[in-house]
Structures are given as C-alpha cells and as structure tokens.
Length: 320
Length: 133
Ligand code: B12
Ligand SMILES: Nc1nc2c(ncn2[C@@H]2O[C@H](COP(=O)(O)OP(=O)(O)OP(=O)(O)O)[C@@H](O)[C@H]2O)c(=O)[nH]1
Ligand SMILES: [Mg+2]
Image (cartoon, rainbow over the protein chains, first blue to last red):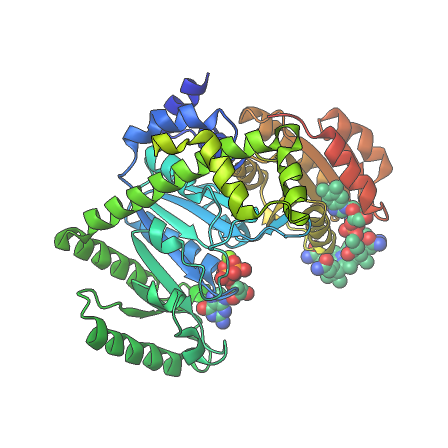
C-alpha cells in the first residue's frame, strides 16, 4: 500500500506526491517507509530559493520564473510557505493566487505550506517535500520562503541558489544590509523596478557587492538583476543568472561541498528530531513532565539536574 | 503524529467578480484554525480541482453570486471524482435560489450557505463533516 505510493511518486503521480507531502506535514507514520523508498531517486533536481521581505513580489516572481523555466522545457516543482497564526494555528496561504496560470500545466506542481510554528522562514518539512518533488522527476524546485525579516536564513541550507528579493521604498536600505538575509544572497533581485527609487537601490546593492568582494575574496560575485515581475520583465535574466550560478558551483566543486554540508545538517537534524520525539513521548507518559515542572517551580530541583537525570536515564554515562 | 489541520480551497468559479464573501470566509476559516488556500477570481472547474489535488485539500468551498452555480458546482464534484478525490467535502455559498439547492445536493454538494448565514454555522458544519483521507 505505502510502497504503491512510492512507485506512484516515481511515476510522477500528482495525487501521490500531494498525499505524501501531507503525511510529512502531519508526521504521519506512513511517510517514513515511503521516503526511504524514494530516497535513492533524489538528488537530481536543482533547488532555488526565493526569499525577501513580505510583499516584495516573491510569488509573482516565482510565477514568472516558472514560466521561463517551462520555456526551456524543464519541469518545475514549487513550494510556497506562508506563516501560521501563533494564536489560532490557522493560515492564509496566499501564494497560489499569483501562480494560477500554471494550474493546468502538468509540468508544474505547486504546493502551499504553512509554517505551523516553525521559525527560520521555512516549514519543518519543506526539505522533505523537496525530496518528494525531486524523486517525482521535477527538474527545478522553487522554494518561496515566508516574508522574512533579517535572520530567517534556513533557505540557504536547503537551496542550491538563493535569490534575495529587494524592492525600493522599504525604508533605509542600509538597514537591510545588516547581517542575516543580506549575507545569504547568491543573486540579488531588485523587483518593482518600475517604481521610483529602484535605480538608487540598484546602485546601493552594487556598492555593497563590491565592498563584499574586496572584504571576503569570494569567487562568486552575486549579480544584481532588475525585474518588474507584474510585467514579466527581467525574469529571463534572472533564470540566466541562476543557471550561471549553477555552472559556477559545479565547475568550482562547491556544489558537492554544499550538498555534503546539507546532508550532514539534515541528518543531524533528523536524529535530533527523532530522539527528542521518543524522549518527549516518555516524558508525557503519566504526566511525568508536569511533575518535573512542578518540582522545578518549587525549587526542589533545578532544570539542570533534571536534564542530567533524563539524559542519564536513557543514555547511561557508561554508554557515552 | 502531529495535529492534523483541515486544508480548504476557497474558489470563485466563472467570471463572477463578487469576492467579498470568499475573502471574508477565507479569513474566518483561518481564524478557526484551518489552512486556507484562496485561489482568487475566474477559476475554471479544472483549475479548482487541480489546486485541490496538488494541495491535498480536505474541503473545497465554492462561492458564486452570479448565477453560475448550477453548472460550475456539479462540474467540480464530477472532476474531483475523476481525479479520485471523492472524499473531498464540497460546500458552496453566495446568491443561490432556494429551489436550486436540492439539485445541487443531489449532485454531491454537501451544503449551501446563503447570505446572512452566521459563520459559526459554516465552520461547525465543515469541522463535523470533513472526511478522513
Ligand atoms: C457588494 C456587491 C457588489 C460589488 C462587489 C464587490 C466585491 N469585490 O465583492 C460590486 C459593486 C462590484 C458589484 C457588481 C455587480 N453586481 Co453585485 N452585489 C453586491 C451585493 C450588494 C453584496 C454582495 C456582498 O459582498 N455581500 C457580502 C458577503 C459577505 O456576503 P456573501 O458573498 O453573500 O457571502 C455570505 C453567504 O452567501 C455565504 N457564502 C458566500 N460564498 C460562500 C462560499 C462558501 C464556500 C460558503 C461555505 C459560504 C459562502 O457566506 C457569507 C457569509 O454569510 C449583492 C446583493 C446582496 N445582498 O447579496 C449584489 C449582487 C450579488 N450583485 C448583483 C449584480 C447583478 C451585479 C452586477 C452584474 C451589476 C451590474 N449590472 O453591473 C455586477 C457584476 C460584477 C462582477 N464582475 O461580477 C446581483 C446578482 C444577481 C444574481 N445572482 O442573479 C446581486 C444579488 C444584487 C441583486 N439583488 O440584483 N456587486
Ligand atoms: N509595481 C510593482 N508591483 C509588483 C511587482 N511585482 C509584484 N508586485 C505587486 O506586489 C504585491 C505583492 O506581490 P506578491 O508576489 O504577492 O509578493 P510576495 O513577496 O509573494 O508576498 P508574501 O508572500 O505575502 O510575502 C502584489 O500586489 C503584486 O502585484 C512589480 O514588479 N512592480
Ligand atoms: Mg508570496
């Protein structure tokens, strides 16, 4: 039954792709055997991240980029993330509305995802979902992050090429040139270039890129691409820049380094998650965690001691 | 297993431009804890069903105020079945004459909600009728 889903994913079935992504999101136990089966078929898709502040045009740009990629006869998987409400747990997933022109193109699969409390700009299982799309044979995967502030930079660890979208009129540019999101750009996009202030923004970014080049001695100098996503302008240039970055990564050997680092991070994260899940389950049994919290609140024991006890219970010192 | 969320597509089929109701409901569903994908105006039944398929939706909500419900609503149900999505709950609302409602239900639309329906009623209906995938 589950194995059937894996086969169907490999054949590109939309239903199977969609269902298994749901299983991942729900931490449904049916996901794991399926992921295991499709894993050998992953690693072929090229993964592109689109990030930037809320409303900068990420979805509109993703739509245009998808159209450009389709012109080059490659298939596309899109994952677009929007925030869940911390109060109600609900989410308004509004990215799809900008991408409806592809909704009947069988070469495009588009999925909206809510963060469900996960910080960092992605959802917890975005990376898992890229694997499903990858195994299904999609050539390029576009990930649109939530509208980010300054330090939601998880996309950098998931994407091969990260595009940071900036627009004129979002206040002091130098502000956004602090650490964080400005550091993760492989490509800068100045969207809404039809609006006043875009030329100035463009020069300011170029200036920063030049500064960086002097300071860091990096071999890849991020290009700055001007776009008007609502008019479909500049998206071809953006795709060219993405392809150039890919070529650079592959020829310099950085591609393998990057993917190896990603695999390391992801594996550690998965181990972390699974260990925590198991321990959490046991602590929840007979409300043990509540008893512990009570004892800490009454200063009968410190949280440091509790951690030591809990860890020793399942990972005795003799094993460490 | 993590908590399951109800995922709902809110769509406006046809050329109808009345989107206040659909937008209001999208917000209300999100505030009721659902994950809502609003597809926007001018959707064909094929587009709506493809969205339901890719998003793995539990519910499709259709809003029509321009009198196109008798064609579009049943068409969506029919296409969902074709795509093996018969389990998806379909509900509708907008300006729909009372005499059309029995026919729409016959065609597989679970419930129709007209103007003035309190949104609690709609949310409760969805929560108690959503089906397992
Ligand atoms: C506001 C309005 C407009 C606005 C729309 C603004 C907008 N962006 O939405 C404007 C001025 C643009 C407009 C234009 C037109 N309108 Co007008 N409009 C209305 C009006 C007065 C209110 C609609 C509204 O927003 N209600 C508020 C929302 C919240 O209510 P609702 O959508 O009904 O939603 C509730 C329920 O129906 C239900 N529901 C709705 N959808 C869904 C979906 C799901 C899944 C569920 C569960 C429930 C649900 O839940 C909601 C909460 O209770 C109605 C009259 C009326 N009393 O309904 C006419 C009305 C809908 N319009 C009408 C007409 C004819 C037009 C025009 C053709 C007029 C013209 N000749 O130019 C144009 C067409 C525009 C177009 N492109 O389609 C007619 C439609 C007649 C028909 N169906 O046979 C109406 C009924 C007026 C009338 N009595 O003649 N209109
Ligand atoms: N003037 C102008 N407006 C644009 C351009 N690109 C996008 N927009 C508009 O900007 C608004 C936001 O666009 P989206 O594509 O939804 O932006 P987003 O970054 O995906 O937004 P979030 O996902 O909510 O963070 C929409 O009203 C677009 O029409 C552009 O090049 N020029
Ligand atoms: Mg968006």
